[in-house]
Length: 234
Image 1 (cartoon, rainbow, N blue to C red):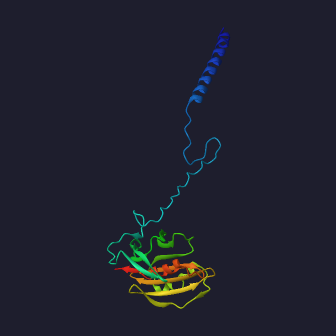
Image 2: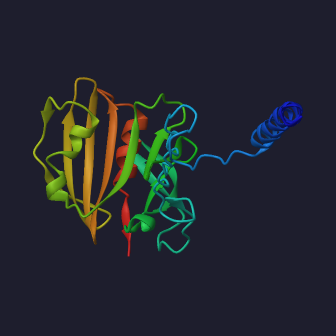
Image 3: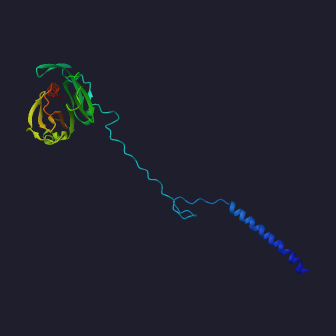
């Protein structure tokens, strides 16, 4: 009788074990898996996580300030007549006073006379250009300010910015509207160059006239005459 009772109990114990094992497996499979910590290896395939992308800062472009640079200005206090006449070759040209300023670069105010009907005024990269309206850009007068430089120091190199020099004259002191200037003349294979260098407080102002080689047109002669009216405003 006793062995028969044990025999009946064994199937019940086996069934109970199966139920307990099934319950354990269900609980284990339904439990949430904790995510792997950032920067550590993955528990599944042991592959390191990629590093965070590097942030590259782009530097802000150079600026003189909040306001855009303007060289050509309306200066009614220049102390010179607003209009006059200038002899060019065998005729006389009616011209208007043009004012400018390199103040944003630490330079001076300036003025010169120009025939605005024949010549256009252009500003580019901190320089002023005066060229015939009908020209293709081979004839022009450029005005620039060179901070921290002197006329004598610039005289040996400035003309090389406009081409390979094949012939040059010795520098000479001249006068522009009552102020002293160093006058330079040179030629390249295609261009003749003439420059006036004026020392100012803190630097030097250059007036450079470029013309096609052998050019003796009236517009060329006019630009030479207009350059000689250049004056630094006190």
